[in-house]
Image 1 (cartoon, rainbow, N blue to C red):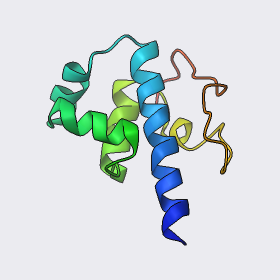
Image 2 (tube, rainbow, N blue to C red):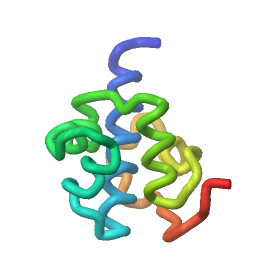
Image 3 (cartoon, one colour):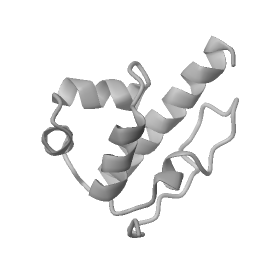
Image 4 (cartoon, helix red, strand yellow):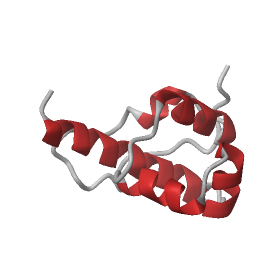
Length: 94
């Protein structure tokens, strides 16, 4: 897989993290404390500057009360405007 595609995937996942966090009105500091990282690290996940690991995505799904699939769905590769994807208010992870 080429580097540009991996970077785009990271940005799309980051956008979804930011969407879920803002919809649920959770500050960066709260999400960071839950994950055991700094708020700056969460911001780097949200911008795609740093890649969120599988375990981080799993923990975020628990925190946001959703399934991990939500981080990978409702966006198209090549579409940098992810504002149109819907974010469920709650979904439970199991």
